[in-house]
Image 1 (cartoon, rainbow, N blue to C red):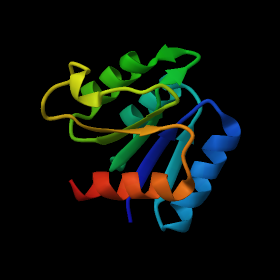
Image 2 (cartoon, rainbow, N blue to C red; image 1 turned 90 degrees about the vertical axis):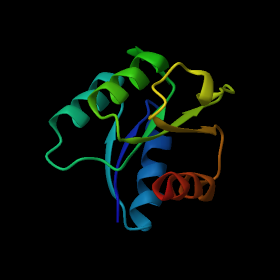
Image 3 (cartoon, rainbow, N blue to C red; image 1 turned 120 degrees about the horizontal axis):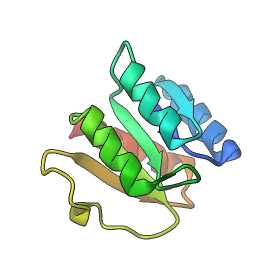
Image 4 (cartoon, rainbow, N blue to C red; image 1 turned 30 degrees about the vertical axis):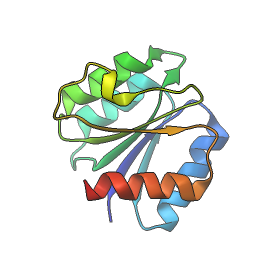
Length: 121
């Protein structure tokens, strides 16, 4: 299936996302900080198909992480997750960026649907 990077500082949620994505056959790499997430993309031997990014991380603001990911891998599909509403179409990202939003809290099937939709784009 797909190779997915998940970046979230909430350890229980990170484990839950990893479990559900793996059950669907995806290869999942998890990181708990923005810097670790950017390093995972930069050092990846095999590219990621999707990145699931928490918008609020203790070491890095959401826009800084999002911009860094787009800068490193412009073709990567990105799912931003946050408890705050956001309009991903008005973030000032390049028009080629493929970014979707999933509001927390969400059910595991909502995550799976959002990832599947991004993969079909």
